[in-house]
Image 1 (spheres, helix red, strand yellow):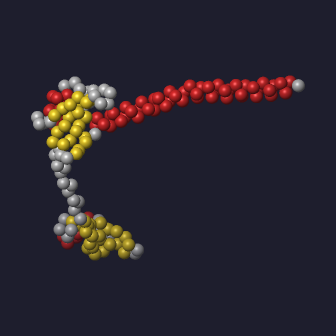
Image 2: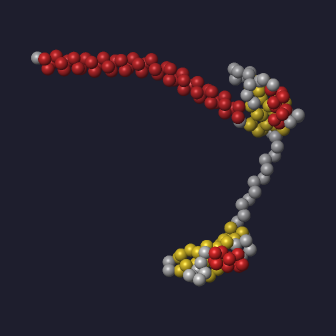
Image 3: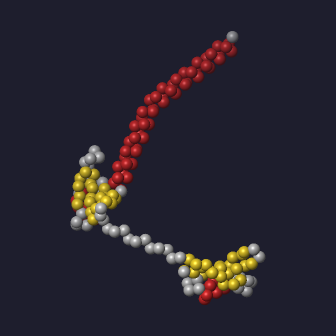
Length: 159
């Protein structure tokens, strides 16, 4: 008899616990959603502040708040730059417009060629191989490499 009553008591406690958890989740879910949206909105504003937009040789740079907007714009991008205090995002943001510079050309990495300078041995190893490659190839460097039973002096040099 007592066992049946105790089981009913435990089952009722479990049901009440599930109800409390569900009620807590119902209260927390809107708060979590609101915080998530706030974080996404704030990160979007920060991203737009640090992004330099480039269209038709005119660039735009977000400089943060509008305090001393024109002075900061001219100090950063030169006297020909123009500043505007943009209110479209709900808070005043300093936008600086300036003439874009052409990006510098990326240097092409030098091509590396491979060659050989004979065999490495107990008499000629490591630095000896490097010296042989430097003599054989302009700007060459060498290292010993084992291929099967052979110990080869391999060279790398600019093509």
